[in-house]
Image 1 (cartoon, rainbow, N blue to C red):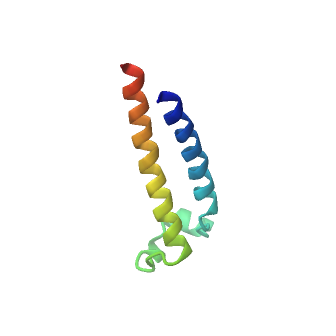
Image 2: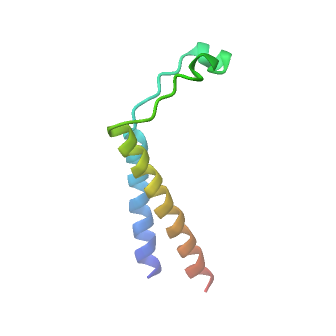
Image 3: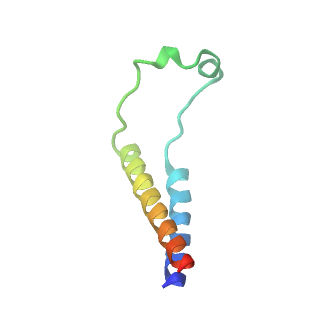
Length: 78
């Protein structure tokens, strides 16, 4: 059981890396870093399409990763 969960954890880890790398880049320039992004305060838009899908996939994979990690800790302590 422990080896199976460890294998699934490794697969989920690789999928998280792929999901994060596939997310579109936010084009922040040096002026937003210096000004704190105050000009874009009310310019935020809700992510749509592929970006929203990738955010959901990344969140779900993160939850699965966390649950598997806790299960592995529990199994290794007993």
